[in-house]
Image 1 (tube, rainbow, N blue to C red):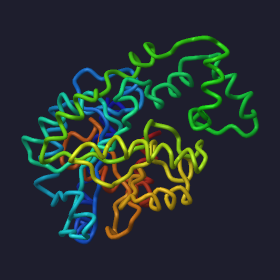
Image 2: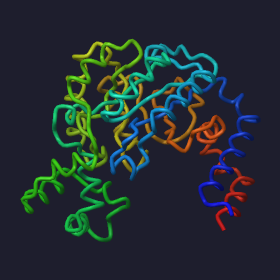
Image 3: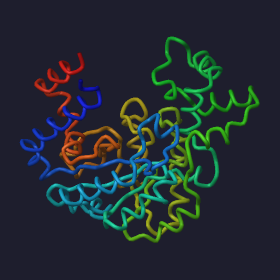
Length: 329
């Protein structure tokens, strides 16, 4: 009998092969931006829960495959509009320790330009906001009820962490008297230190971009708070010679985690390009607002990488929708 993972892998392989054969030429004038978070053999509970980790050997395979099938460009080439046929970029978010301990070496060995969008506050030893709000929403029963009451049972949206303003979180922590720092650090796993940032800034293949000072849901911030978070992070990042004026929204989902108006604010602050985490190909690379496709440990073959690249088109294709529906029964 076939199990669910085998069926998913088989479907991805067939779909990836078909779209590679018939749609690959569409990428000749497009930009495909790949997204990663953590690279380690020992992922944290947080990384496993949200499928953020790729083992180093799989990442090495993926990077080689991307390098052999695409023309990977630097941030400077992107900003200049120097976009070759079948262009690609490799990006990371946040600043997990695994990037600096494992991914950086693989990037150097493969000579692939890579941008990591950093939150510098947790690199300075402060609690990682994304880890805090997801921990509270997943693990802290008292907080879930507190959040529902604070936001309103009828207006709260899913997932719960999208409702977590700093005011609500800080009020809950103040009322309970709990210190979540060590617990959240264990949940998230090791984060980069300022020494990691300084050492890796010497790399000729790695660039630092802005991801806000900490990993807040942008839609929970006022315009002034968004500006302050961007500028505080930029001030820190400008001390590194590999800083590039690119920005990626934390969480990265248009409409639910940031708005079009917030894109305009970030652009007005000087960001040359703004990135989401919405998994589509950029068929107009000259746009100031671009999207990124996350690769995971599932994408461990070339055809599974093609499946992920065309995932949004595959899931909307009537034939493949019918096949997937039949396999799920």
